[in-house]
Length: 384
Image 1 (tube, rainbow, N blue to C red):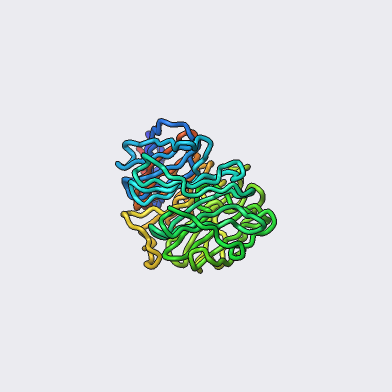
Image 2: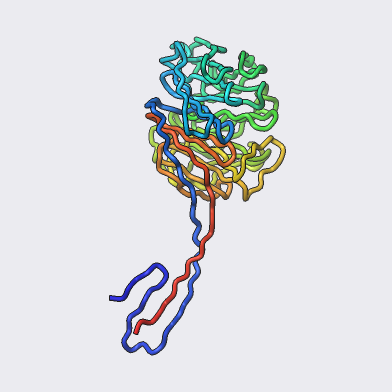
């Protein structure tokens, strides 16, 4: 029997009198990426992650747990905030290796609506906000700079709950109820990855919702003081809608979502905007399909978009994560490739270094997400 190889296909023939060479060049797109699973030495569930620099990352978890690395994931410090054993820190934001803000998600009437802050690398924590208002359920926090930030909660009396800070999270103020965004019946946000609220550039903010009939996106151009809203074509319901948002320019952004009760649902799960969030249309569905809870931006080099300059389209990739696996796109959400099957809930990048987190202590690191084209040659040869 003739020998078969990847580059040559031999056609046996006793009467064949000529040798035929046919060259077929195939352009094959391959994804080069690798999640490195890290032994976190903890089994807590994690949904909050902030990669501050390529070497510094903070993670928020259940049972009052916060993790930090300052050497690129080689070593991790695990902090248990005193008196917070029942709290689930579903979002975290840090300004470096010393200062971080951890937000607890859960019913405020059960004493779970709290925000903590550390200034000494997690050694001690101060309770900087708490509320027991019935119905308050904090979903996420984000910052425009080291002073000004925003926190999102589910609707109270038909309006989204908004907090703002002007002192780096040392104190928080409730937005006056008359200025809060009006929610539709059943509309709410998901505290799945801390990215249903997004602070963009110098003063813009976006909120992605679910819970109602269709997912919507709220936007503010004055640090959350006033809001407008846009309809989207993504279906929503009590367990479905938008879970994560990200922007890579003033005009271009993405929203991802799905249904947390049906994480492998084939409903389209990507929305794109090219006009600053005024209108949204479907992008290509991720591979693998299913719920995506967060999306972040990988850069070939360490850089942070400042809200003004445009990022070169050949210099970044989008990375989306969820229970069904993770995906990357170098086509701005218009096509996707699978880069892993791990069930992550949240992801965060600083340049080319990213961390993703999930349940039962799952932490992973990635340092390369690239697209290359290879050419393969098939040669047809007559064998005598």
